[in-house]
Length: 177
Image (cartoon, rainbow, N blue to C red; front, side, top):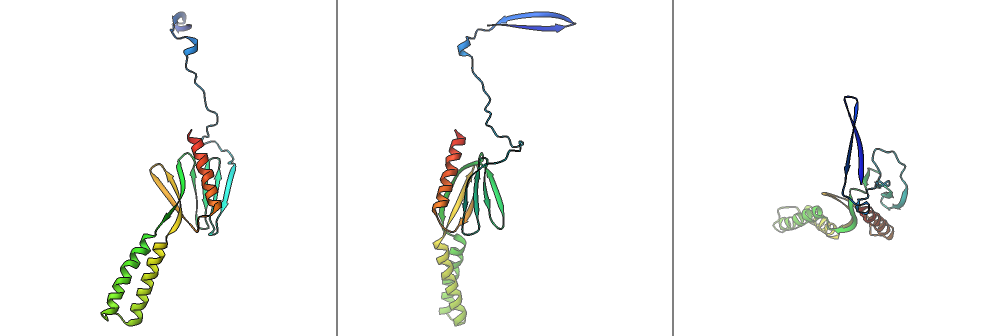
């Protein structure tokens, strides 16, 4: 291939000609991916799927973001930053630990007559209830991002939530490829 360039210095054109040893079929083909979505371009988002929960949560998936709407807060995450979304079951550690400490201590205080009968029984009963509540645990919607995660408490693991999670993970896997 021969390329011709003209360089002007002192208003006199100079002609340069040089050859490049690259065959036409070996040249790399560069292209621009036009489906890239810039954050500074105001584009209306298309709703792909929505999921309404009993506790007042609303989960919404658009072509760019995942929204969580609750009566107290609204949050969203870009699909570019999400790695995956899962439902996990977690035991609630704070009630489990508080109940596990208060129930035996109140029982020992009751047996040694350090506390009055009804006060000791009430603290023992509340401690046992806290331990049961913590052991029962709850389902959480876990959004994993690079370097961090965010979880939302769910009432139950239902089919609409599972379908929503499968749809989000499918779109995330598509965007990664």
